[in-house]
Amino acid sequence: MNLSLNFEESAIRLLIFLGLLALIALLEAIFPRRRTSSDRLSRWPHNISISFVSQLLVRFLIPVTAVAFAATAQNEAWGILNKVDLSVGLELILALLLLDLTIYWQHRVFHLIQPLWRLHRMHHADLFFDVTTGIRFHPLSIVLSILIKIFTVFLTGPSAFAVLVFEILLNATSLFNHSNLRIPENIDKFLRLFIVTPDMHRVHHSTDGAEMNHNFGFNFPWWDRLFSSYLAAPKLGHQNMQIGLPIFRSRNEKLIWRMLTQPFRDA
Image (cartoon, rainbow, N blue to C red; front, side, top):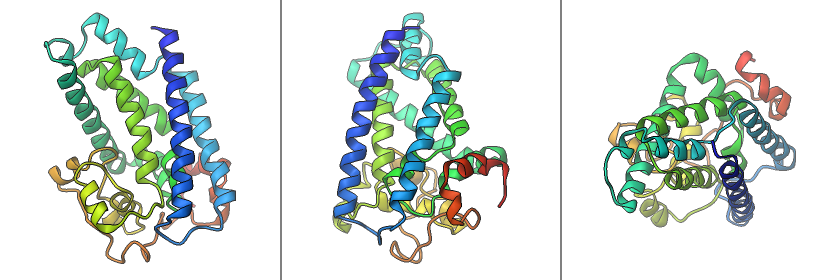
């Protein structure tokens, strides 16, 4: 595996991630969709810290990124896309669609299978919905997600460039569609033809179980419509809907050490 490729990819993704995090945080502060939280300064350090812990664990347990693995798969001609002769543009489009479809179904399965849900529900336990919710995932959930992506790369054979584009896109859309950013309704209606918007994904973070089991998409909104999991809006409206889970609602559950143990507790 190419260690220099790992380092270059990490540097590129980190710079883009930090820039987008700062930009979206600024925009949602200026144009908030819902009433803002006075708890932000105490929540954000823990949400950001758990993302940092996740990255450390991934680097410790998995010595290769999905991008570097894709480069090896390309050299070894592993995967469907490495068996056919496609233009760069068509290969990129197919790769992005296949990877995004995988993430959609991964998300749905994490809601369906109880041990996986116990890992994933920490993401849903955030009582507020803003840009840092988009990086608040349990480290073990992130490790499983990386392994699923690597296995998908092995089966489908996307180029390293396509996987890098997908990883950057996935990080960017997670920050964007979890943001507390107010987008005019007519613009939101147009945008969600092509990308998952904050209003579309916020429904998925409702305490209402029926609403939570809709709008699983991260990048593209088409899978939810195709597989009948699309819901246009919460029944109480975006201003009145309740965010989070019925459990883990005490103030100390926002602390990183409490978040890390949530999969193993029910209160």
